Image (cartoon, rainbow, N blue to C red):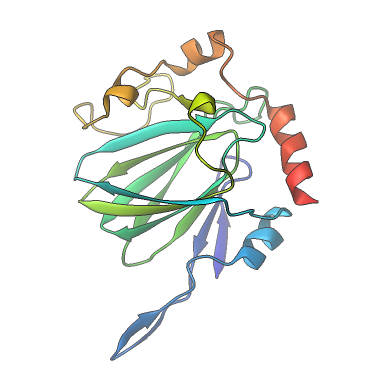
Length: 196
């Protein structure tokens, strides 16, 4: 498996090795040992999600309160999505910055998103996306930032299809004013805690 660090600290792309022949193909799209070697922490799988989206749907920017937050390992099972990681950790050297990974059913790359980093994707085609997460969904700790926030500047269509929740989400500045954003220091402490 090839591993590439993204420009947002602690976020990684995993590119699996494909074994193809006349029967089809086989690949390992998740390896806990490789993820732990790359991050220095265990991935304590608590929930698996499947998201089915029509073309031009945008989901996110989603994150959870830290601790415990919800780390994610995301892969496209069908179709093609542009997957975004957004650094929401106040005090991070890349606070407010984002990076992207193209996830599709051909390459089957995956992206690891640690707790405190926002996640969004744009379905370029009809797509099915699978998420492995480090904690179960907790509505009281669930947070959303507008994917259309011009200060963040994600390259997505202005007429993208959004859920009512995502369409009404605050900007990064508004979320900061409300005290919703995780701190870089709290996230670093949490990563050390789960790395033991």
